[in-house]
Image (cartoon, rainbow, N blue to C red; front, side):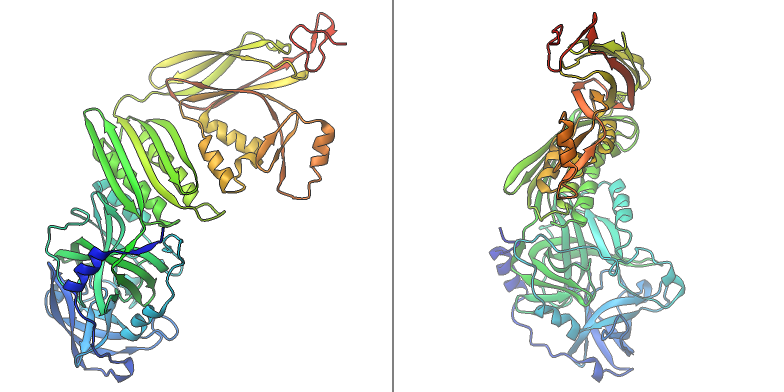
Length: 601
């Protein structure tokens, strides 16, 4: 499926609303002089495009990079005398003598007494039309780069005359208030102003003409939950538009849904006034996101990733359907916040909680990744959010090759009840000396949360071919087991390729499982990520001379026997005990591979 496709509905709507090819003349910065006056266009309320006054103060050459000039201007009119430069004005076109000179895009410092703004020259913005599009079949190229990162609150800008892009109001719709704070923290270096707004895409509000000065939305999430950045459209040529006058996330060639927007009101603030709005109908796609601004094409639709969150709690069921942009850096964070918001809105943020989860990730050309787990405790909600979204993050951020995720489905059962958790306190054996074929009977003591001790009895048979010597009996929670295994056999738990990563995600244990295993001190190896044990010493020696340095990895201990035991508790901790295997019984030595009670030759 192509990343971008023609949307006839959006194309028809925009052709009628915006209409016609622009014939506006432009004025280069070389013709600008201090004292020239002009007008700007933007939306202060609803969809009506209002005008404001502009006085040219000069041109700052190379102000935002080599060859990147910035026009300095004083703004006035409308609410600007009381609000200053408004977040959401990014992209507002400015005309002098009827000629387009550029877009309002930068502010100087903070707490400015006058609305002094920087204007990105229009020549740099329309040059975005000539940039090559994103490669077909590649997910959104959007990314946060170190060079493009901007802090939400830049303290240095309070004291210095620092030029910074006007922050974008990011309207977060459908999210719980606690999730908005989480979003603010997660994206604190982006220059965004997170604002909690109403419904994601409100088709009931009036839709104005999609023309210079109109409100312009760029969506990262759409559906029952929505995340939309709001700025202003600067210039339109047929079905091509430019806006903002600065980047959104420095995505380069990208693919993000482009919408109209309705502005409810301008909210004044001593630090940074902003427009409170909501996304309108999708009209096309943003295809370029670079330093001079963003460029979009009307009538294109973006291939977003479908996500479904089904949540059940006592007496309540909720379903959230949404689409998230395909991006290795942003998507995992957006998905994590969405799952967190769904859980909080249906239950609670603090206290004891139990979450049973089922996650399905449908992949293109590969089997689906499915995982079930359970989380409990006072941190159960946070652990559940992190746990259920980690497989998705691992796949989309994998370093091996691009992967197309067709759909992600979360089925979550949340119960606000006493936490069923326990810590593995100790293990006990009836004896410590055994022969091959014997049954080891184990008693595991669990220290439960506010419930005292509980005992779990388990039995494990020592294989007949087990050599004599010491064995380690280890009992672990699933999480502790993974940590210990990553040290014991790192070659098996360090993914070598995408298929190996999918294999590891599919074999992850459940938090209510108790892992009981017998380990011997005999060495082994992992060959291309797969553990091979009980090899003759001559073979082990030969494998050490493999031509590939990472194909064969040594394993310090060998797993003799392993079992996963389901329990009624979410477990933590690990314990070990040493036992001895003696191949002699009544003076007779057991042969390798002999049955219980069998005699050697």
